[in-house]
Length: 258
Ligand SMILES: [Zn+2]
Image (tube, rainbow, N blue to C red; front, side, top):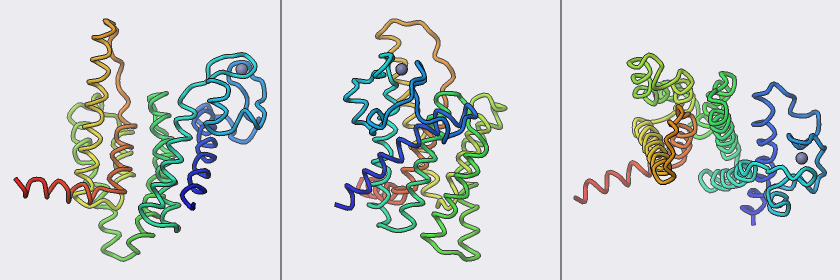
């Protein structure tokens, strides 16, 4: 029952996150004006704004001008719903779960903005570092050694990509990628840092492979544009935050069995 309520809340917050994703990079206010169609400018009624449901009822088109609505909108809402449920499943119904959820939403925001604009704002990354720190403190408490570990995790998580950034002089990886790993790695153990990087590179590899295959099948010779790495790093950061230790344990057992 509680999962259903939390999931609903996730959907509604996802809807708000969509507004942020669309407006903040354009420097627009997230409060005024009220939601409108980006194509025809018509103000949307409340029944056009029900998460996921409105998209299905309208069959992915604006009610007024029939311009297609990006499927990214319902996707973000559904992802937020999952993030909310996962957060309470992992740490229980408490402040830590709320912080974990906000960290997840922020990673989602950074990912989609990076995917669309090839840019990450320093403000959002800084906010991520602060929220990740608050989350870790809410779980592990605060002491001299825990603060040291928070910083250490951040550095460990950045080693590989930092090296690629330095060697390629910012061509293969951007400074945003390095900063994102630094912020997301706050409080990571060695194992979590390894799992985070491993997942990020694996998912990125699969994505590039799928893109290439798609090109070959469709016989398109268009060169693949530079690929934004933020979404993959964000996936790695979030999964390792909630399950990094478990995944590492599972991996050790696999090698021990052999
Ligand atoms: Zn319209």
